[in-house]
Length: 610
Image (cartoon, rainbow, N blue to C red; front, side):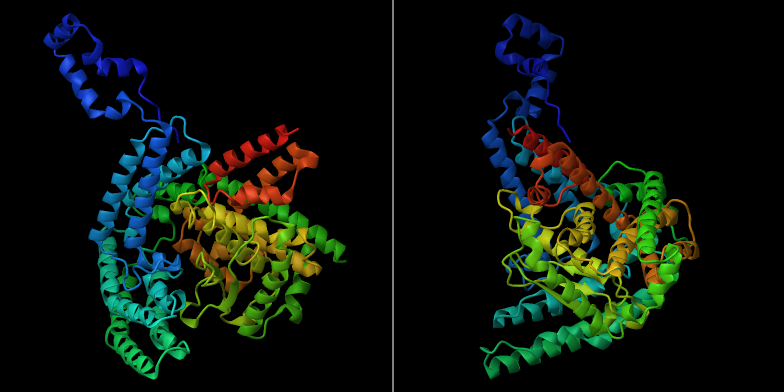
């Protein structure tokens, strides 16, 4: 986004008092023009004299840091995940008042940032300026649509994130335990505030579909039964005294029994008796107030492109056809007459059927660890922190396989958390591709590198844009072929199947929310494209609950592929895969249009080198 400076002609007029003769000034005063001009001069002093570039960059860097620090304070668990323990005893305020205050604060940051002229800034500073403006303006759009009034679904929500606290905070010292116990005491307040926000959503007609709301109470029941909040008591550091262990055990147990579990039971009751029955009957988000705009904005936010739902749907159909053709070539090489017969053979082969949850976890770990020593063939920028693999707990079984970032200092590793529920209904065919996606060279690689980049404001080092992060991870799946993996043709089929799955998402997400597809139609289309029933069922509900999010993967991958093809074509013998990957990664997560501009400029610069 560019900001247009006031023309110098207007600059001369608003400062008329400094250079007009007394005679002209007097005439203007009599005509009541000069007072207005002088008022303009007072109201927009930034245009009267533009500060030196260094001063303006320093001013915006100060604002960036203030914004970043304010968000850490507002989101204590995010601070903890970054290794900043100042707010370890706190949980966020999530009430309607707190949401309104955050909105007002963000608008104030936006106004201050827009008041800083960007003329003459270097690319990095200009990009940072534009990115924060964009982020704050998108936040304004989301606030105007009241998206915050639907804060919980089966994929994510305060109930499951609080249940993960014991796995996402450090327990190295007695104060760390005490901070965690303080957070346990705050859980009732957070759940009560969330109920207040959800009740407002009911009043405003902003409700998830009933088939989603009906799953939520059962998730809380599972959390209560599993009681993950006491996990820190199972392994104290060896340095702790017996007295400290006894004191912490008593305090934590009391907090869980007195505060946490009763609060979860109350929240489950609210979900079951008050919230779930009022879920909407229509699946499409376009059935909500201002629905067409609501989905169009979700598509723009998740893809970071100016693209319509209809265009995304068409891209999805095209990609499904292309990938299916590639899979058919593989099937014939494997000796089968067509893709359908090869699929049937693969799906019937017991070799690719897991027999236990642990087998799935071990499979992911095997592929991630075989890729790690190959990374220097693909990158100069390498992750400094380790990555672990674990199963999704039973209470969160509806979640999909995902990645949780580690701390920048590497003391807490990144975590690949794998879906394992009902293992005998799953397949191992996709594991190699998805392991590269979630671990290395996918999410763990990209996020670990981003956390340690130098010369960028802190707000750019963590989080970012789903189309970039998920697009990168899907692109990373095929990098296994660059270093000699996917040796088994069926595993290579799994790679294509994983890509096909993301293309199918373009079709069905837009199908649900823009074209009015039924749940049965979505599942039938997924079956046609070799998505097994267990995955089709949970994924369909994911798309219903989380409009637009599933579009990010394929749209991001296509953009990175396009840039790679452009680099290879323009650079020829100068093309270096490691240099290309580093250029994509070392700006942090970016909107796809900004990534395109950045990498295209780099390609031109490389081509110009003699």
